[in-house]
Length: 155
Image (cartoon, rainbow, N blue to C red):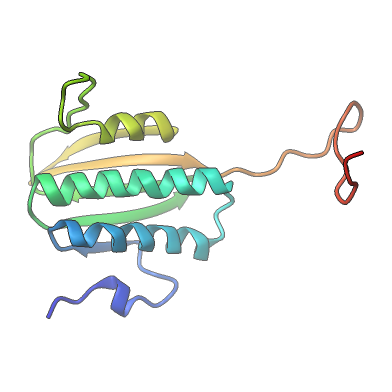
């Protein structure tokens, strides 16, 4: 029997967990990243939250599908930034494919477009691919100029 963090998670969830290889693990890992972010109360817009989950899916899927081995997912929150790291045991660096005729490699192009920052670093027995999203705190209400008032209906 495989023990999954989806079956054993207690909030607050540990920052790091292992994922077994295979495409069936990706949706659960995506859900768990989102659940951690919601539990922590990280201020993100609905659109940024969806982008975060999509980036998590892409990076986790790359590790699980292309390496065909277990990976370790880590979610960190520090200095107003949310960071997701995926460590695998493959030393090959990730590739971004931009050619129209390519059949793969577009996931990292998507991560590059959606995340504020992303990258990778080698480890002793593989690499870590990571991406970051900034927390989105609301700006203070302007003291002058045009704006909107909550509760007023449009004319």
